[in-house]
Image 1 (cartoon, rainbow, N blue to C red):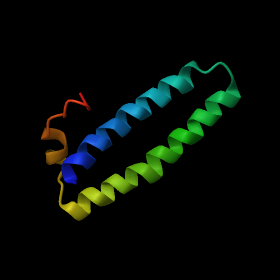
Image 2: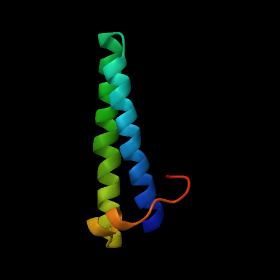
Image 3: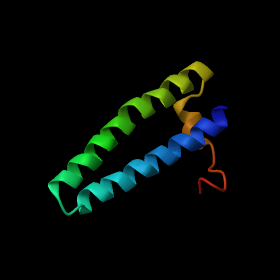
Length: 74
């Protein structure tokens, strides 16, 4: 489970980057606000799930950094 969560957390990081780019290139304020709210929701609730799970499973930050990407994540 820990290995899966490490990879999925990396996907979340990449997804937030994509949302940031979408927000930066959106053509209306309404669209930027919608992307911003979604990014806020994902970065709060979703990220705290990963952090709680890593703590419960005893996964250190070093492990999260040093674990190589799997093929789908790369």
